[in-house]
Structures are given as C-alpha cells and as structure tokens.
Length: 98
Image: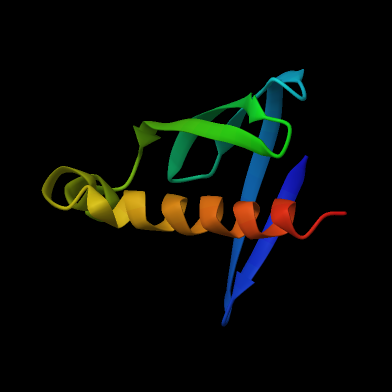
C-alpha cells in the first residue's frame, strides 16, 4: 500500500508492506521512504474484558540522509515524539469505537 501525506507544499510517499497480520494478537509492517525505512511490531494482549494492553516497537533500519541521521544520533527523541503521538491518536480512535 502506498500512502501519500501532504504537509503544506511537501508531498511524502510512504510504502507500507504488511509482513504479519495476525489480528487481534499481532500486527507487523515495514515502511519505506526514499530517505529512511523502519519496521513496526504491535502486540495486543487482553488485560480484562474491558482493557487491552497495546505494545509497540518501532525500529529505524535505514536513514539515508545526513541531517536525519545526525538528528537520530544527537536527539533520538525527535523520532520518539511522533511515534508517541501516532500511538496516542490510535488509542483515541480505538476507544471511540462502539
């Protein structure tokens, strides 16, 4: 699946390859962009009838551009903050489902 996102005047093309879709237990995917690649692994564990533990692991496997590579080394939180935001958005989405 190819996803396109627009931020102001910049277009980003991101290719998602689902490597494991064993929902409701696990989901894994690889994401490819011209400057970087990453993998995502998600697990869902039932805590009780009304709660689920959502754990995720995201690994940047290739950073092909000098500035993002430098940022990853000097300021790793630059990559953690957007991931946290995505996961918080996912949590809100799930909790709004009937």
